[in-house]
Structures are given as structure tokens and as C-alpha cells.
Image 1: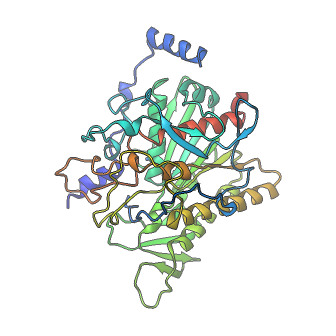
Image 2: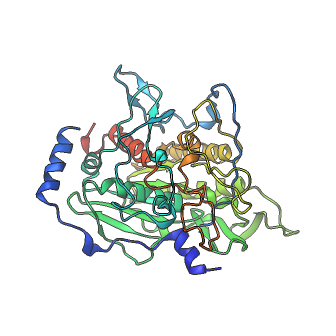
Image 3: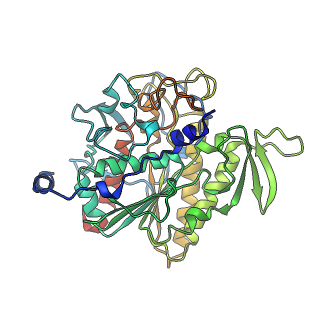
Amino acid sequence: MKVDFIIELLWGKNSPNPQIIPKLTLLSIFAILLFTVTPLSFPFFGSLKRIVFTSPPEQSSSSSADSILLPSSLSSSGNKCDIFSGEWVPNPKAPYYTNTSCWAIHEHQNCMKYGRPDTEFMKWRWKPNDCELPIFNPFQFLDIMRGKSMAFVGDSVGRNQMQSLVCLLSRAEWPIDNSETQDDYFRRWKYPSYNFTVAAFWTTHLVKSTAQRNPNELIHVYVDEANEKWSKKVENFDYIVINGGHWFDKPMIFYEEQKIIGCYHCFISNITSKTRFFGYRKALKTALQTLNSLENFKGTTILRSYAPSHFENGLWNEGGDCVRREPFKRNEVKLGGEDLEFYKIQMEEIRVADEEAKKKKMKKNKFRVLDVTKAMLMRPDGHPSKYGHWPNANVTLYNDCVHWCLPGPIDAWSDMLLEMLKMEGGNDHH
């Protein structure tokens, strides 16, 4: 096994050199004026456990957050619109960057570099049922975030999201590397013209854990202890985008107050067997409580909901793959199985955190949901599959149906995120 290659595949090493950051030319200044005037592991143990059906799904009240947590947008008729319920529709103008124009794409998401033959997976946009969701405007985003900061806290799919955002922003400005460490798991970029900082804090389980790179080793997860690698660093950020879930498919031993309380797939006779959802709920609760306990944090926590994987015909290590080449329509697939369980836990726990925050009337922190689950359930075509490496590469994850190609479907997450910021009245922009 080529360990160095595996590590590079999963976490990447290609960070931009600050020396390559270009100065704005007169042409780019003109483009900016014209545009503004015209207005990212071994988390791979899941399989495709969802139901294909023939009639539209019923909306379950237990699987969606309270309206105060989910933003609404206004349609042309002035009616409220749920931007997270809708359909994927063709968008021939996409993509808005390429794998050669953006340096932030990690190798295992660089699908075009590694020979993916089709391009249609890049040419869709998310269309809410009752309104239009504008395509991401990098200049508007940076203007709203002027003088602010945003941290992405979570696993490699969270870093995948941050890399998508950085690629979309590259049309407006390239950032400078402002990282406090050379550790590629913890990167920080600054956009000097806007004094905006974006950072990634990698955490497999949100709480303290001993995550190993060997998929055969048990992970020890301390479900009641905050992971200080991010919890001690995010207090002064204005926005924290938090995510997690995929790593809880791996065999684990759970600890509380430094004592073993159970395990998942550990097969140790004297330890009580627990589900992955038992551990995830406790870990997420601890993470959200930690944010509520930060004395100086007065910002907004955005929970990016669970993004389903799409392994079919086997698990990640059993030949499972994702070979579909078009999105599902909303009447072709229904959220179910482990995807639904992760989603429900997230919605329930963020309600609890939001209620706790409201009890602390002196605190100003808010909780919101970036609800991508239903949209991403419909995108089995957007994963790298075998196009995250060369065909003869000796890698652990041969078919990647967890992460997302860049450019690709998760670029729509920035469409949704910007709309949320606009509805929150960021810097008084509406």
C-alpha cells in the first residue's frame, strides 16, 4: 500500500503559493464593475439505503427544522419560498470556473483531470419549487462579507465545500495564504480587498477522537469532550459552518467521562454494542453546546446538513460505485435509511441548541440550517467515482461516492449560502 499516496488522495497537498497571487489588471477591474452593475478520510462505509418510489414524498414534520432555523426567500409574488425544496434543472451556462482555472481543487475531486468523459454533471442548477435561486455572485458575497470571517468546521466534505467556495470567489479575487500552520487540514485564506477571511478546521467526529488513517483500526471517540483543535480557534469568527456524520460509519469505541459507554462494530464481548447514531447524536450535541459556551462568540452557526453518499451494488470496499450520469427527479427518490437518521438527528439537536441560546439572553449567537440533504440526494451523478485518481493508482478508495467533483453539484451550496446571508441582512445588503 502506498501510504503517502493514500494520504495525498484523501487530504491533498496542493495549496497555492502566495507568490502566484496576481494583481488586478485594468481588464479585471472593468469586469468587476460590469458584473456588479448588471447583477472539502475514510468516511466511506455507507451504502445506498433509500427508497425509489413513484409518487411525490410526504413532508415529515420530524425531519425538518423549525422555520426560524430555515431561511425563507421571497418569490416575485411576494410569497415565502423554501429555497431547499425543489428540482435540478439544466444550466448550459455552468460551470463558472474550471479545474484548470482554480488551484484550490484537491486531486481526488479533480474529475476532469483524471478523465471523466461526461460534462453534463456540471451543467445543472438548483431551482426551488416556488421561486428562483440566483446563481452565486462572488462580488456580492465578498461585499456582504466585507470585514467578516467564516470558518468551516467538519470533515473532508466540509473542506470540499470550502474549496468550492474559494473556486467560485476566484472570479473576483485570489486570496493570500494567511494560515497559522502548514498543516493542510487547517488552512486560512484572506481576501485583502474585502478584509474577508475563510478558514478550514478539519475534525472527523467534531469531538475529541483518535482517528486513524488505517481503516482496520478502532477509533476512540470521547463524545462529551470538545475537540480543542477547532473549539479553541473559532471564537472570533462571524460565521461557523459546521458539518459531520460520514466518519461515524467506521468502527468506534465511545467514551463519556473517560469511561467506555459502548462501541459500534468493535466486536468486543464485554462492551455494549451501540449504533453509529448513538455516538453521532452525543458528539453533535457536545459540539453545539461548545459553541453555546464560547463567551466571545457572537456570530452565527450554520449547520450544513448531511450530504448523502451514493454507493450502489456494494459498500465502498465491496466494489460499490456511483455510475449514474443524470440527477434524480424529486419523484424518483426518497430520503430514507441512515441518511434520514443522520438528518433527523441534526434537525433535532440544532433545535435544542437554538433554544439553549435563546435562554442566554446576553448572548447574540444564532443557529441556522443550510439544508442541502434533499438536493444532494438527487445528485448521484456528481461524485468522482473512479475519476479521482489515475486508473492504475494503488489507492484505498477506488470509487469515491462521498466527495463531490469540482466543478460540480456542491457549487449550488454557495448559491444557497449567499441567499441565506442576504436574508440575514449581512452588512445591510438585501
